[in-house]
Length: 251
Ligand code: PGA
Image (cartoon, rainbow, N blue to C red; front, side):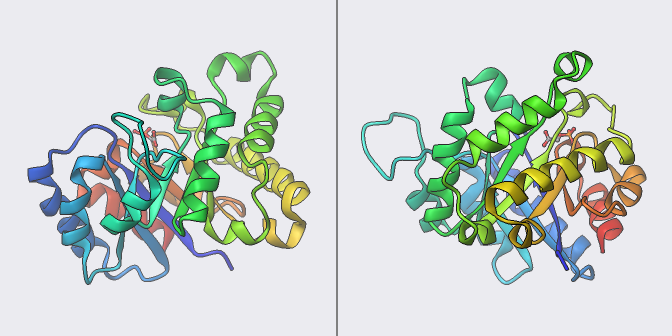
């Protein structure tokens, strides 16, 4: 059985001074849902406050990106050892906003993913097609490329520290959610690609989150699908009540 994992992706939205309160609210609002792994991924500058506020609770703290080198002349970047030292347990890699605005490629996704896993953190690797790609019939091709290049040299043993997030780009922040059947179809495809890459048995253990306008009102039917093992939540993660509603749906 795969334990459901619901992770908030705060993006660039919460001030350091607001962080402790939101993490504490999330911890309090989700404390009764022990069947779900609860994560808040925060801006780098919020991490110390988030880790301190989550201490002694069930909430894990994640980062929104990480560089693949351990140290060196990379002005403005943050390394995996730095994140580990700060108490971070999860890192989102290859979010579509990073691909779209910051030049992230499947190759850099691969380097970051391997560095995160090697550092002992869990990589939440995002894949997903744009509307244009979907309408051009390229869905399978895009997911196939993102998975095979993004996960190159990721081993079956590494998969204990791997979560995949399927986020159709057209559903992120738009209010348009993939239907549960549309999402399930791609989740099953992702699991079949994983099976080819790391073996069927391991593929069955990897959690695949759905992301894109997930909210309390649509979470239950998405999370009821056999290959949907959680959610990566943007907008609805900024209100503890909404976030907890999604966690409750996954419990
Ligand atoms: P959304 O964002 O829930 O606001 O659509 C999801 C994400 O980008 O991870």
